[in-house]
Image (cartoon, rainbow, N blue to C red; front, side, top):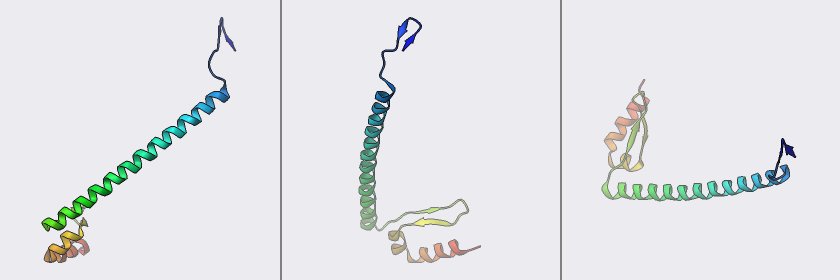
Length: 94
């Protein structure tokens, strides 16, 4: 297709769409592989964290912005029974 004195030398629309589909598939495959890799690393990290908490008799917790306990680990609850009662009261208070 002429553009002024120049001729368009690029791929046809069908070739461009095919190339774009191939690149999209490659990118999706790379994203999937990376996602799986990161999920495995996260699982391994969580395992080591839980094992470390068991060995050291520690745990963790988080508060939400209102000051209520939003999250606490089982290790924390198991090792701190009196704290569990306190956390329960704080979470259920008005």
